[in-house]
Image (cartoon, rainbow, N blue to C red; front, side, top):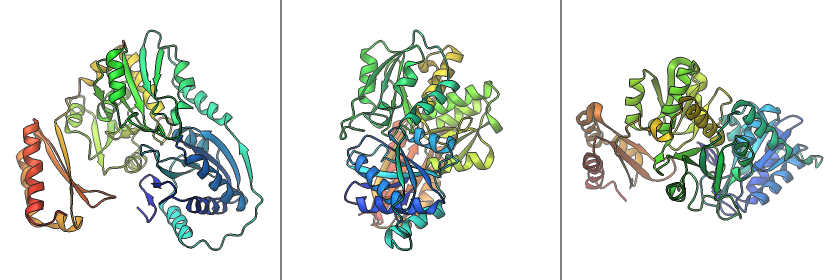
Length: 440
């Protein structure tokens, strides 16, 4: 990670840590970086997005770039348009699952991947020292909302199915998929009920969507639904509930999709890519159906890197950010939902039945604020305690201790056969950190 760019673009509090001036500079650099630049911009529904769109356009037009505006759309829609129409790059204005007061900038190259680290570093250098770019003022701006329909048609061509009789509740998170999902889902002949589908600039991610599933769960429980699913603010991930309103997380979805792809001869190298945060129950279930796993550090970028390097076709995170490279290498919540619906059709089963094949182990994660993360993780007594716990858990659990990437926190996570063991082992590590004086 650089000074401004994290694992998923630049994010910050709109108008405070992410300012109009910074966004303008990003636009001016990107507009100049590509020769004869054609750039497409999309945005999510938070109230600061429109102003940041104007800032980007100003900077890009001053650099002579030709800018095309998708308006409100999902991040995968922006990535698809960038790739399939060979724009110089695509810029998404979004802070994903963060509250509406935050916003961010994600930049995609025309292969559908996020821009390379070295380009991010050049942008950061220009933000700090904006020199060397001539102001031309000969760029243009074009309304390009019709491209959203091309993305929708692409999905419908690949995932055409008849869902007659299926009743589904969909939480649109008051976000991007309010503008991109309905036309696709409504074309499938099922019965879809939408909640949180009235964005007002301030209600995106507000007690709704994939990070706040309570409303979806209650709606499914009270209604006669077969399942439900919820997107996050920019719709690059999705989580599910079964017909009883019980959460079906990314681990269970990845298992189900890997099994489906394998049975249809589509699981290249017989491998699912996961991160270190996936539950041990997932790996035990994969072993039973002879599917291998490749485990990466946290972050969809790391999952994607492994897939590209090794020729794997599916990977993702417990959070519901799932990549299926049979179509593209960017996460797409709507496409994941369509693939799950297609697999349910194939097996003629309920989501509850599909999810039951993965026995999720109890998990406890505790964050401890510390003075220095490196000192904690290099302490021999603490690392010895972690090894000891790992040995005691054996094949029936695991311990993971890692630093936060953005805060002065040590994250201690234990999975075990019961909640009591999770509690015991997590606090053996936490208490030792406190005893040694490392906690703040």
